[in-house]
Length: 162
Length: 106
Image 1 (cartoon, rainbow over the protein chains, first blue to last red):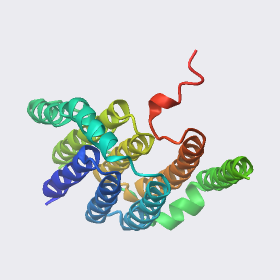
Image 2: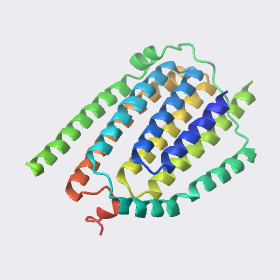
Image 3: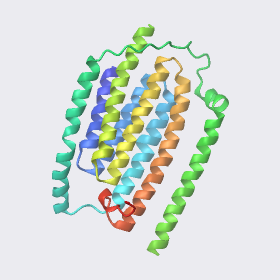
Image 4: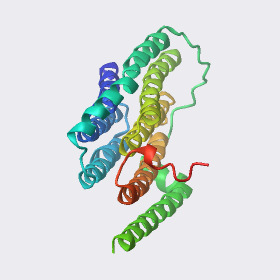
């Protein structure tokens, strides 16, 4: 079952990259996130799956949709020109992907890993709040930096427009 | 059991490498700035998948989840900032083509 989900994941990512329309690419990205979150549920990571589904498939897709709507569409001549240019640049990708997949699946890499003892505390909340407090501080700082960055960017754009 | 898990990890790694190829190729081949961001997102998905697979194989899924949650927060902020920059470039140049932003080229 996992193999099927992984194949769908790669197919969705390939569709995202290969499709001509930016809007379809954004939908493909949301689909990739949704498939990844299904895989996370199956691999015993429900909390991360919820985050992936709500933030990556929801919020980031909404951001992509908004930026695509704000920018103007290309003229029909430019669309045709872009289509031809894209074909010459992107037709290599599926070929490379198929070759890489075949080579990697036949490649027998011997990984010598010594697996650790299974985790005693399996509660993600306990780990996040007790073991990884520094990560949370970092997240808060990054969020603040992000908010200030966006405010400054929009302010400058507003000044130029005004 | 351990060898089975390690084999499973290798299977996941193959798909991670394929996602990395897709994202990297998209970022390198495209001339559209929004599409470059989509390529970056796919690269992030590959890293997320690798962390989740490593957590599952090492039987430490809670630690992997904590890392993935941090990664998702950073990813979102990074994409939001990058989109702000792309938007300001679009307002300035009226185009999303990366060939039009060669002003700083030395």
